Image (cartoon, rainbow, N blue to C red):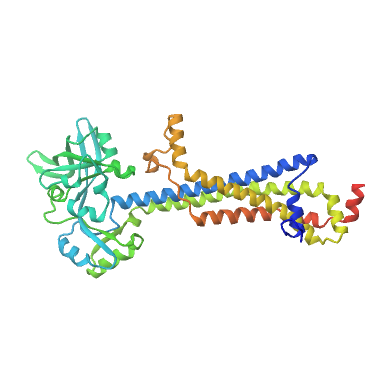
Amino acid sequence: MSDAGRLPYTWWIGARYLRLGRDDRFIGFISAISMAGIAVGVAVLLVVLSVMNGFERELRERILDVTGHATLEGLEGRLDDWRGYADRTAGSDGVLAVAPYVEGRGMLVNGPRSAGVELRGVAPALEGRVSSLARLVAGGTLEDLQPAEYRIVLGRALAEELAAVPGDRLLLVIAQGNVTPAGVVPRMRRFTVAGLFDAGMYEFDRGLALLNIEDAQKLFRLGDGVTGLRYALQDPYAAPGVIRGIALDLGGGFYVSDWTRRHANFFRSIQVTRSIMFVVLLLVVGVAAFNIVSTLVMVVKEKQGDIAILRTLGSSPREILNIFVAQGTVIGVIGTAVGLALGVALALNLTGIVHGLEQMLDVTLVDARVYFIGDLPADIQLRDVVTISVTALALGVLSTIYPAWRAARTAPADALRHEV
């Protein structure tokens, strides 16, 4: 044991070799490059994984804001005895609330502008129990959707495309037709824009419009029936099992779905992309880690005399190996620590950095029409920090094995003869 820090002398010597003198500046420069390479690779890997985590979290939260956790629908696209089903299932295990809905497709027309839209008929008094749509509406409220008044709430991006504002009267056309002496014509109705909602997710903001459930029933000629029931659950992740149990308790004969099924492709693509990015960026860390090999090879060649003297004084080959393993490990530890600090700092301030770059360069770096959301959120998770740290350190230690083994095989007599 040494007196300085009470470390084994092999580690003390290995760390001391990092503080190279005037004649070893090139080796010091290569060591610094190795540390910097590991730090950059670790930081980029942490930021990318944090962005993928944040994107998945934001996507999940915004989907749950607009859609229910689970749905129960009739096999023929309508549910007639929906009040009885709602009463029987409202008290089921894990169920917080139930609300009916009517769903269909149509086209909105405002002068020369038109857009296809998903129509959702909601009960304003019940909708707030199963989604957060009520708090997303601006310029009006869901309570403005009174029956027989034919009012409609548009997503903000949809309103921009139609150049519509609250108070405008739009023509709604649906594919179901009316038979007239002139033939079958599409069913049409004028609706007044009662407000706009902003879910923060382009798919909904561009493609969804809300109307009163009774108006929707008349429009789609469902009578007293609805498309189905939407459920809010205590545990959204248990939605597949809970809604299946509800359908079985009711005797079956229903079509069930949940938020994980409806948007499975989104989350599957995120997971696949996340795995690919981890492997690709890990190669960057690997290249930087294996720079340690060249650094240690040069150090071993430069320190032949020191190795010979240590062997002459009684150091074993294992202790010589430990010296250079220690040196490479210190490089890996410092590089990983700096990379984690840099990655955390970037991830925590990423949204502000992106917005600043967008304003500075006058470009849109994160387009909601492409990425579904307009922000670049980051969610740093402990498991990612641990995985990245362990992997980077493991690569750093593995890269020390060959040069350390070469150093351990150095013959003292040959090394001293070359020194002379």
